[in-house]
Image (cartoon, rainbow over the protein chains, first blue to last red):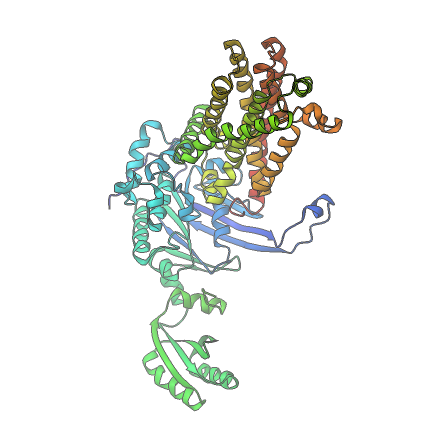
Length: 352
Length: 278
């Protein structure tokens, strides 16, 4: 893969010593439901329920860092990234991008960031890849004499040089996503915001995109990405903020977050047990080790146990099940993941 | 952003739009086929009703200011089709971007909003001019209407003055439909309103008084009237000058209003749910 050409620093660019993103007390309140035209015309008070999609979060992302915002659907990830991208006005809090107050000077802030929002749909399918980039180069004020070279560079950086003159409608989903990334890189911004960049991609295309993001970070760019894929956050991010109901419930490197689970391994059990015997069985497991979660699915009880000496734990657990008139159908012993961190912190699974 | 950067963004948007438009030959068929066929139906209908009788033609001329029934109908439909091009082109362009998923990407750029708002107009202006040329050739060659160079120049002056008016209307609607989150319903309503009130197929004089007053407040009525006066009524430039100036002034006002409205809509979206919500 060809490394991205170094982009000249703009005149008046903020010093790199300032964090790429600094957000404090970021809050966004929405109202549920819709206000009818009749209500508006009658000037009736707005009685719709208010809820905080993002509830006072603090973020600090340094240059050269890949920062992940991990959470289930509806946790507030996309709202957060849209506020950082100046597309939504926060209800409260402050945002500084490379030292620029994004709320007071949104246009100046926009010039500092490249964003991939909306994925493959955000590019023009009826134009070629090159034509897409040519258009955005004009909108991003890339100097005319530098446009051709810049397009060549970003196409190479995302591995689309040989398909530049094909219509985007003939691209695969992964290629369209990479084109959207190329567009975000056009103006050489110090900061990239990527909203669910690998959604809809096959494993190979996802791995390819992650590799390219890693390379961009190595050039000094700060990358903030949202994902609900724990594996992606684990493999790609230097630090991860786990977000739930609009709040950061944990923040740190993936390794540090996993250490917080206080277990090295996880035992996942599928147990056949009558519903009335279920509480007794879970209580019996709890006497042996930490029960991180349990739920009934497909007529069986799924139990997640945290522990260290899992090799010794498994026979004891099976015996406890037998004593409680239950049959263990399946046992999986796996390393701790960010999914377990989320489960420990919220009592819910990321996929719920 | 400086004006040259803004003009460059405008030019790039126009080129992007044209590249998309030219990929669909149906667009060309629309601007050539419909201006030929649609008015012809009404011309035949008029012949069926009046049978070319002198008394009927005299009554028509007294109300319409010309006895050229075919020319009257062709010019009325020409402006109507132009309006249709404007509504579904620049009028719907931002909404199309929103539905496609590319609007947020545009609003993430530091480019001025006017460049994005009006950038789609030139491609559709080409289509509109092709359509008007089709109508002109049909009138001259097909219907044998005597159009001299002076009349043609007067008609061109009316068309030129109407460009900002029609595309300003399109831009204003383009910003409005982002807020309303619906284009089709509004456009159907407007097309119906223009068809009934603006004298596309009959003289405005046959409408009741209140409807005539409403028609007078609608800019397309004046475009149609001025075009007919220039080509069919034999009006001189001095007689048309006032209308031409009014059309141009209202057009520029509409363009300015469209830019202001888009700014308002953008602020509204930033305080609301953003542009991703449609």
